Every structure is written in C-alpha cells, then in structure tokens.
Length: 367
Image 1 (cartoon, rainbow, N blue to C red):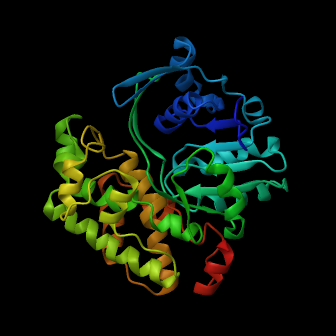
Image 2 (cartoon, rainbow, N blue to C red):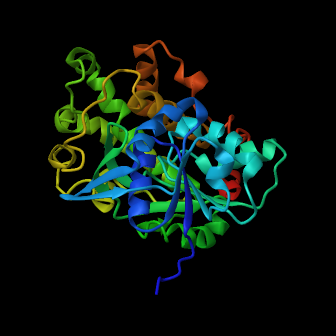
C-alpha cells in the first residue's frame, strides 16, 4: 500500500540547473512534478520535451525520469500543487511573483529554493502590490538544495543533495507549518530564526564576487578554461572571504541571528570536508572541483551575488551603523569591471520598504 504524504504535487518554477535537477530528483522519488519556465525562456524546456524526460546521474547510478507536466503555462503548472517551488536566480523573484500571482490559491505553500536574498518578502510585496490577498504561506532556504550541473538541457549530474540547510518562513511565526510541508521534499531543512538568518548565511555573496574579482584577468584570458574553486581560491584569496565573513558576523550579531562560519557551513551542507584551511576545503571538494567557470565578468557570480547579496549586506550595515569596508570595496571594483552601478541597481533596504526601520523594527518585520 502506498504511503500517504502531506505533499504529492509539486510545481517547479524555473528550468535552469536547479529546476531541471529538482524535477529529476523529486520525480525519481515519486512526486507528481510539473516543470515550468517563463514563455520567453521556453527553449529551456525543449531538450526535456524532445527527450521525453530527464536522465538523472547520481553516484554511478542512472535513472530516466518523466515529469508529469512540462509547460510554459503557469496556470496549468501550479493548479492543484501543494507546494510551488521556485528554483530561480534571486534577480528573477519579482518577475515570477507577477506571473504566479493571479493563479495562487489559498493554503498553497511557496518555497523559494535558491540563494537567500529576502526573497520571500519580495515575493509577498509583489503580490500584495497587485491587490492579491490569497492566503498562501511562503518560505525560503539559505541556498539551493543541490550541488549540480545540467548537460545539454536534459541530463543531470547530481554532485550533492544538501545535508543541512537553513529554512525560514516569512513571517517566521509560520515556520513550523511551512517547514513541515517542505521537509516532505527535503529532510535536510532545519529552522532558522527568520529570513535575515537565511539571507546572511547564503554563502554565494561571500564566496563568489571577491575571488572572482581577484581572478578577473584569468577569467577573461582563459576563454572558459577556468575553475574558480580549484585554482582561483588560493590561501591569499581565502583571506578576503574570511574578511567578508567577519563583516557578515557583525550583521548577524546585530540582528541576533545565528552566524555560521564559512568553514562550518561548507562542511554542514556537504560541499567539503571539515579541513583546517579554508582554501583547501574548496580545492579538495569533490562537489566544487568539477565546476568550471565563471566564463565572463557578467556571470551571476558577479552580477547576482553583488547586486542581490553584497549590496543588501552593505545597505543593512549602513542602517545598523556597522562598517563594511571590504564588502563595499568589492561592490565598487566589481561594478567598475563592467561599468555597472551596483549601488543603483542592487537590492537595498529602501527597495524592500525598510529604509526607516531601526534594528528592532527590522527584526519585528520578519517575525
């Protein structure tokens, strides 16, 4: 007799590495999966449609998985889904919220499974600004639940299913209810205090922009033959990561949320062994080692992780009276590389509608 689960139908929005992997993994585990992509990116679905499914490779095992539905029709994708999971870049949250909003139903769970960037609050802000008051519950993880790469659009090489990831609902008083459903998909999720905690323990802004900036010449010169984690994060470069982490800790302490040191976070998630030296953790990682790139100075390692990560952290520091000189310098230099004003384009407390709040107000907002 088939065991009944609280969640059976899952809509996966976004058909990049994370979405294709989630469709394969959750489909393999018996969930009814609907894979969706925005119409303007519907070509991302073509390889899956043409092949009739997704080839999942995981630790020398292979399985061919056929999603229940592959579509660029959002209404069909989310109709009847208990969980709507967004596996998208942080930059795309507002666009997906606008697309989803008219078709959301009471009691649906929205799970933003990507790099934490106050995404739940931003999603809610959009749908409320559209006059939609559907009674959904929403939450987010600190990072994507996978270490993965997709080949030719329909073949997944799954390096890692995260062993432990922070999760919070927005507001945090809903975390027990939302987490109960999301743990049906990923038992590795553990409760965080609030979405400040998930946002400030997202490792990407700490790991990517600084090392990429220090390897900018190599990235441009290599023509694609560059491995950031294996060759770009040397002992000296790792000191910059640690300097960013020190500034991040000050932000966490001010907001009374858990600070997870970089070395510990890498080991807890399962990316690396718990080694003494940070650069050796990256270099020896079986998850990070095979990952090539970034291939250009406009990679998400720069654009997303500065604009949606470091700019927000800097903005938070200014509001709390905490200096972030290393973070600020990376924002400035990263922008100069491609003549981009990250301060203007990036995510700030002002854009979140939180510019006039003090520390207590910022905590109350997410609670």
